[in-house]
Image (cartoon, rainbow, N blue to C red; front, side):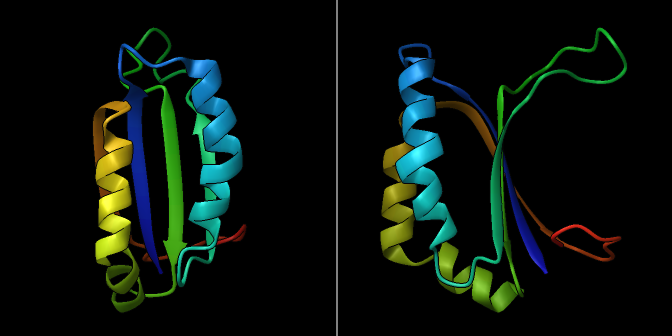
Length: 109
């Protein structure tokens, strides 16, 4: 299984309440219906460990695909890339991590 993890903040000129309305509704539906997506979720980062460590990101999104071929076909599709470039305008400091799950102990993965 391939997992995309996106860690990010909002750009300084963005309204968090408006962002959350969009992100939890329309955008979550878009993510969930991407070709091949098995699972996706969105989280508000609440802290870091050890206690007192700086929290560099406010938000985290993950999405899982069954394999690298399916991920690449969906993620690098020109329409998806165009949408991502548009959406990046509202973010600050995003990092996109692409990983392959080596082992899973329950849950959705």
